Image 1 (cartoon, rainbow, N blue to C red):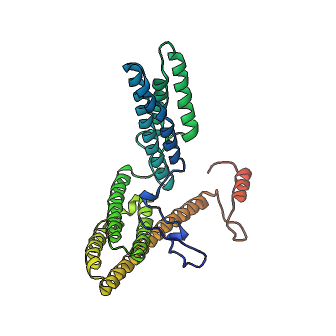
Image 2: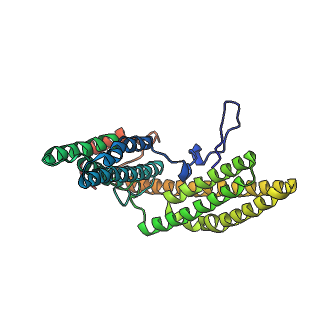
Image 3: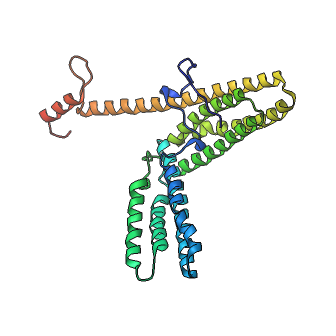
Length: 317
């Protein structure tokens, strides 16, 4: 996907509500330790090369099995790192269903033990395998083992929202792929800006799945229509270079971007309104119970005032 490069004289990008950072595309999520898996796989190449210099078939099979296990362990670890990057990028996320890094560490130790095993030296191979698994854990860390931001969230609604967001991401990828055929960097950047605005809405829906009803048409019908329009425009513009078609397409993106941004702000404002109502109801309740009375000078009671009130009159009401 095209990326927008900015400098000190570039115009500011439209941010989400309250200046929120733009949500990255799934393909742009990378864990900083992913490159380590390639180096470890390269370090296991001597197992592969040494297999062809073994004097017996058993030794050759052990070396090949050791390299294959190590390569599989690094592939599994890389998948776990990518899942962790996606987990860290979201404020509301479930833990990975499979602890890939844990299994990758076990396979790393097994691959080292199998590749280094020799007749009469199985204890040393086992120690080497355990050491390899421990070093894997120190190098890559554990998998996320608990859900994040899921307290009070309906699991069924969260699953529905996740499926809708996944389909919407597929529509955005199709739009980007279609514009890539045009070969125009400005259009690619324009589509990337719209995708960032749409992903701000995705993030809002994932945080509050109750907003899915209001955003369903945007995540489905509107994005599907934008995808179809992008494909048709790319086919036409690649052949004719029609400026009018380009202006119409950019106008469509402008309208879509304004609509998505307005909906995101409305949903965010609605959530803030609900929070303000809950806070006011709680304040009224505390005031009726006499736990958090208003001060004589009309100033709102602080936490220190609340503690002093409780210490003066600890009797529950």
